[in-house]
Length: 167
Figure 1 (cartoon, rainbow, N blue to C red):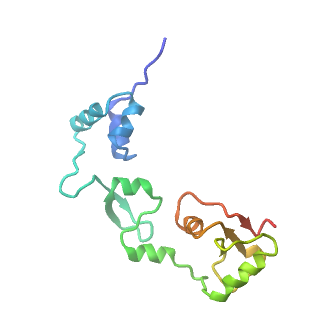
Figure 2 (figure 1 turned 120 degrees about the vertical axis):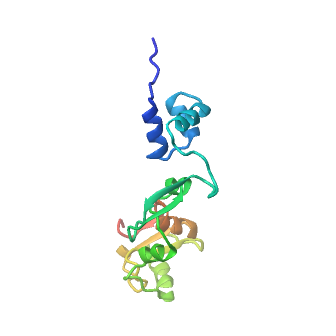
Figure 3 (figure 1 turned 45 degrees about the vertical axis):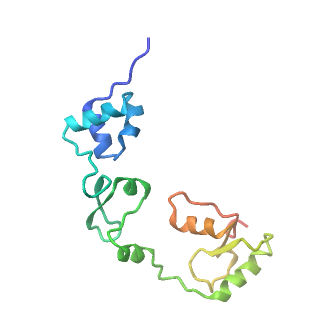
């Protein structure tokens, strides 16, 4: 005897309004068709239309200043942090310890090459952000600039190919 998963209307509404799942994502969870999800949401009074503004929008809090603002549901789901403006984004990214020194990266490559065979596409990273601090324990090495950027900006951290703290 198989038991069917019983999803109620409030569960479907919560998935759409709180978790911000699309009807195509709710349907397999609830065991109903996507069209049935749309009907349930419409009957519950949930606005599913894209309207004049384009995609369905969600009100969220700025991760830096705390101000409420609207973004698209997809953008809300794809990011851990949400900013109301580019000023808030850049203010949150600023590092008071950051000191750029072009020669520091060159020295870092020389220091890392003593423990790991470094190639031209590899990118050194200073953990504390100070390019003058070329202590082995302050250095990491990434396979590419793409991995280095992902390490800084992505919610899925990329592991370095070499970490001076573990040597």
